[in-house]
Figure 1 (cartoon, one colour):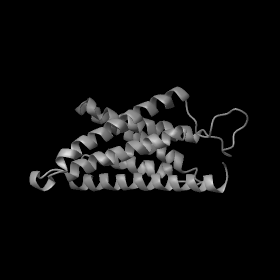
Figure 2 (cartoon, rainbow, N blue to C red; figure 1 turned 45 degrees about the vertical axis):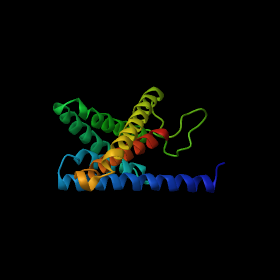
Figure 3 (tube, rainbow, N blue to C red; figure 1 turned 90 degrees about the vertical axis):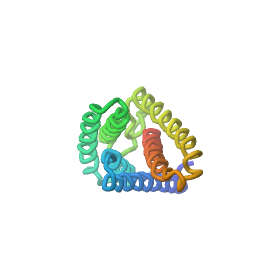
Figure 4 (tube, rainbow, N blue to C red; figure 1 turned 180 degrees about the horizontal axis):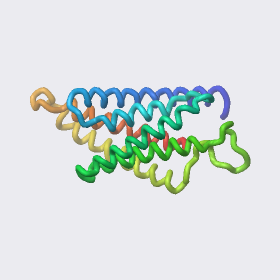
Length: 187
């Protein structure tokens, strides 16, 4: 099942991932402007969108730029750890993006490989598996929190003055977690 249909499906899914990550990044950027606290998430959203772009050949500039951006995001996340361990997810996410960027940079130029080599951009299987488990757990936990929080708060958002923004923030984080999971699955 290789050919035009598979190529089209891959292209469509790549562009959907780009859209999902870009919208999440834009929302986080809007939150930074409004109330602060989401700069790292905005960088991750836009970086994930850029990383998911199906540019093909001639995009050698992307890997070094992303590596620098995600190393900077990792340093920022490390700085945030002063405020408590609840910022550890930002560090894991940033370091995962560094890992995927560096791994993509070591892929064969022609993308075909020979013999029993791994797929282009395939990283260390044990590390990739551990990251897949982490983000799968994050998505399941985040989804269950979104469902349980949305049931009570969404029923009467106008009466309580709550509802919309909290669920939207959780949905944004969940979307980025799913995007991270999807990118890890392609390794």
